Amino acid sequence: MSDPALNDPFLRVVRQEHPDVDLVILPPAAAPPETESTEVLRRARVAVAQARRTLDRLLAVTGRPESATVDLWSTYARTGSRHRIARTLLSDLPAATQTLELVGDWLLAEGWDARPYADGSSRLRAVHDDLVLEAIGYRTAVEVEIRSAAFPLSDASAAALDAER
Image (cartoon, rainbow, N blue to C red):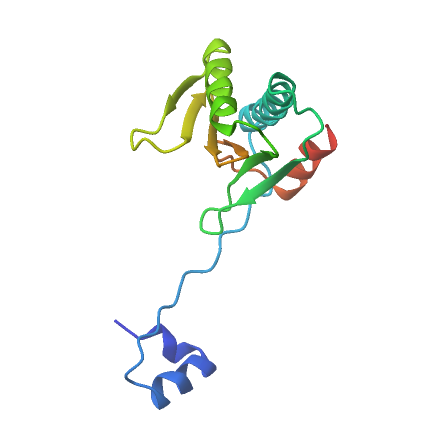
C-alpha cells in the first residue's frame, strides 16, 4: 500500500523531516448532490416547517414568544447531506426545572415521544417523525434544539427551503 502523504509535496516534506509524526489524511469532503428526488425534497420541506412550527408554539406555551431563535442547515462533510437545526434559549426563568417539565408535558400532549434522560440530569429528548428535540435545563434557562433527519439536499434546494419561510 502506498503512502498517500508521498503524493502531496507539503506532506512529503513533513513525512521526510518528521518520520516520528503520524499523519492522518482524511478523505475529501463529499459535495452536496446537484439534485434530489421529489420525495427527499418533500420530507425536508415538512421537517423544516414542522421544526419551525414546533419551536414557535413551544415559545408561546412557555410564555417566551419574544425569545430569539436560530434556524440553519448543518452539512455533514463526509456525506454531503444536511440536517435542519432550530434553536432557542429560554432565559431569565424563575424556575427552569418547572419550565423543562412544562416542555416535556406539552411535547407528550402534541404526540412526541418525550422522555427525560435516565442519568437524572435536567435534560429531555423527544422524537417525532423526522425530528429530534433536545432540551437542557440550567439554573435559570432552558436551551432547546430541534434537529431533523439528514437529507441529501443540493445547495439550491436548501436555499429555496430557507426562502419559503
